[in-house]
Length: 140
Length: 453
Image (cartoon, rainbow over all chains, first blue to last red):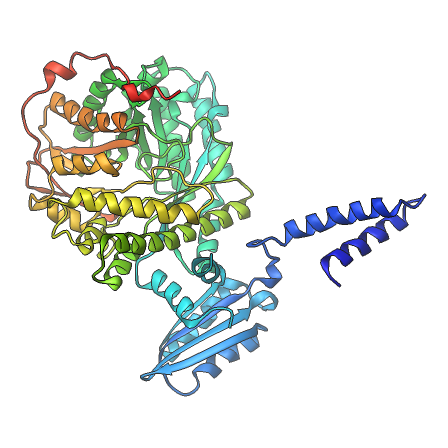
């Protein structure tokens, strides 16, 4: 269902409770206003928090088990991995994960310190941040 | 993958390697409604209002910064020029209010509050006179309260009587805080064409045309620009300008995101981003080093003014695109004591006060954090201020002076303030008197360029 259909649906539910039933043109008008409202809500930079993704970057010397170390924590904390990219260049390990922290068992700062603490043990640099900077600094 | 590896790593490099931080998130709060005939009652209202609005700022800023993965160096407050809080117009009234502001700021964890200020470009009200008389004591008995005066504008000219008073109060403040390197003077700045949404200390105040409360952001960023220039290597000046513009876009964008998010979480309006490059004493975070990377051997060398003009222009062009509202000072900051490359150039006599003055004619916002000998006579100090302030008036721009006549120090010595304020080499002033001119007093009429309508 697209946004317009959704708005029409909502509008008709509303007007079903109103009698006498309004004309099709009134229905359209109400739907148009609802669409406008929905678009305002969903405008760029103001996405619902449930869709706010974060970027986890791990940098350091490669050794077995790094990916496991961090995906384990994410799994334990119910953080969904949306995307993952990992490369090794001259023995240096770089992993970038796009994660969805909205369903996490802990809040964002705690998740960050859990990952950082693990990073300390694995001797790699760990950075967790919402995707805002990546989006806004690289794309106009 | 929604972002390329290069994009992600560039952001990490910017925040982790290039010293990028947002220099300050400043909350402006109006105190006009704290008026009371009884200064103690007015001070109580001020304390109550500041703590009501300001208490949640430091925590919110930290949360936002942490979630975005960047650092915000300072959280600060700016208030309505205190001379406008209607109360009994006596110096001690304003000292009482300043002490309460200082106490509130301390309890909430702010290091500085701007706004012990008066706007006297065309003359003094009784309240202005009382506040000005209270400035030296206020800067001595408080540690967080910062003060400023606006003594001229392009529209009305320069109030020379205010310049004379300013020279006197700077000397008095230097003497009263002589035990600590005359540090009181580092918390005072004199302006022409002062802006009322400047987020930077010591000149911040919350202008009367502003809303009840608002968030303004000041950037840092010399490190990011420096790195971009070094990475680009040899190129012509047009290309150099492009490189700086792109770096400035990124720096400003971060400020915009932080400001917007903080304002949203606190439910108050977002004001402006000040696109000045503000240096810190940290290595690699210096405007002087940027000039050197552009090809000037040392700051102060011939060519410095030209390079600074190109730099600031490119910073503005890049920054303007990145934010919905540019404001504040938005020029180059050259606080001598806070900028590593400037400190050493000034100490070695390469960067003179005269050269710094020339730089303010193109883009710098003033003579900031310069130290002069403690025995500099008042009339010479007044002439020094009048020179700098006239540049602002004629060029329809903000200029400011933050000068420290360091008690007991001579030219060539160094005074150390510590922290962000850094180390200032005491610089030489020519000891020939302008007294016959400045002590005439009165108003220097506005320039012909003030007739814009």
